[in-house]
Length: 385
Image (cartoon, rainbow, N blue to C red):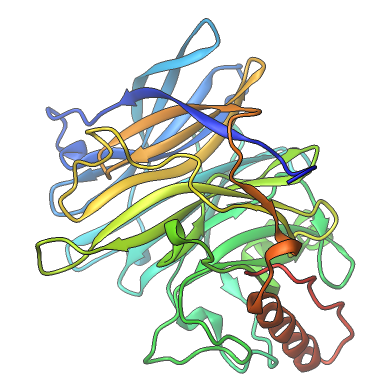
């Protein structure tokens, strides 16, 4: 389609595998966050999993040769399950980190999943140097009567933060967070939500509040749906992958899409693949473009190593030198890297050209939320397909 973006990925290889001599990495080293440290070096925080499925975040320096990431040098544990709400029942821990440098605050913001006694709970921590971390605690989603439900009752994952302020639905300057509420039949669905599959939502916190009191960072409001599963490679569920990156067309969000496949076994195989969408620069609740097919799918032996999981799990985009690189988890075991390329994919379509009934769902939810809040808020533009 004329005017549509053409971003794609070129797979480069595996740069990190578990150290089998380290009990903390016995089950894997994967799903990394990436950021550039104050001294200019590139740092990776990988989820490492010990026997029994207890996760920590391993810090490592990325080895770069001729501008290309080729390996890592391990450098201790950045964050472990040290708080009671981050562990429970002999398992759990801190999982699936996403890193964002926020220039307005002069801080690295780490979003991660705490797998504790209350299930999967998203949380934030901040740092000035990627070494010393201050926990801000679990995210709290403000109650909105329009949804007739408390989002805090649901597990939530795949939280990523926009690196600069965006416009909230009420027109104010806010920090925005994409996230994935995990609906359940037992708890029911919020008003206006008629598809139980997991999709991408966005919530906001006013910039002025955070600047005045960093503790307000975890208090999110103005919840809006952004995207649901639409195409075959993501028919089971979708979630945000790497934190959004500003591109000429808007905000590039690389997401994971999950599809089910029948196998000779008790459960279907789940395939995780990387797709992408472009969000509007002025209204991040609106999808402008989206991929109909994966930009990176599990094809290598390592990526297809799981019996009931074939996994490419995108979790970081980093501009190293003059090129953008995607870092991703491989089969809950390794870390892979791919290079972002222009002219590499024809899988993009304009979202407005393929809205179908999902756009109506988004308008319904936004209208309900606005009405229930007691204030006038512009409804989100049609975005979900």
